[in-house]
Length: 172
Image: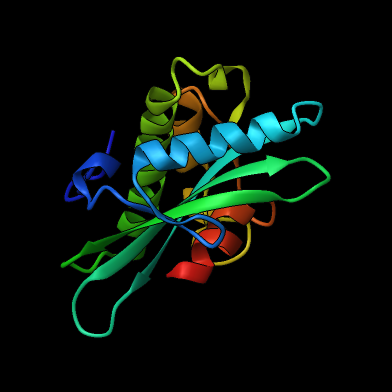
């Protein structure tokens, strides 16, 4: 379903580390433990699990992608982890938006796999895409939203896609 020329790089094939303002640089196992402790610390609250990706063309050649994984304690903030993926090629806007969605989907699958025995699957996981009804990406909404939904995930677009347009964006 990816566009011709779109590169799919699973999160596990990057450097393997996640970053957090709260927990510093973490291996996937350290992130898993931090998330489980966070959920256990206040098990009476409701939670949302959200993943979003943002990208930025670098000066010269290449594109930086940042994938954010957010555990939102509804009404009480949350924690997040992020990972940078550096590409040596530049993407056209349409390719870049599809690649962002593909990275988010790959991260969602790997996140669920990492937590498969921990009961995380009881939470709905949302994918936030950095496209909206205003601007150059408006023509991509149907295609990208359809791709995410057909993968079994809820999807949010701008202005409701804070994981991509705010959290991941702050690290690109």
